[in-house]
Length: 185
Image: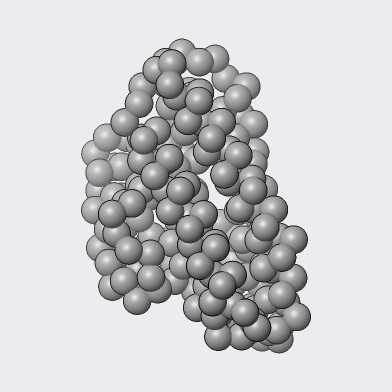
């Protein structure tokens, strides 16, 4: 985990990490534990990233970026679609024939979301906020990822307030489950 950088740098680093995981998943054989391990790792990273955005980035976009409410609604809808796909993938074995179809849908959704954030939302955020606020948001995002859930919870509303209340508890439960099952190691 990084310990410095503004919110845009932090989230773009997450985007590169997810993209790398997508490539690694495609490169491993369809059968075997490595694909499942990498899918679990990707899920953990995407869920933590989304929770951090919903708790800190999106409220800042609503407050500081002109038209921020509409931007956030679109990004949040993207998160809902991704989280549902992650939930569907979570229960599949690595050799399930449907897995590759869902994986391709997930990759397509995530890459479109990343493009939109990097080409639109991040540019507007940088224009609307000073470096001090962007640095503070970067630290808040890094801190949020430490306690965020590691598994998809598509039934939980994605508002910042709900996230601040439920996210740490869900994160703790997920981490205990991960420890017991060896997930993410």
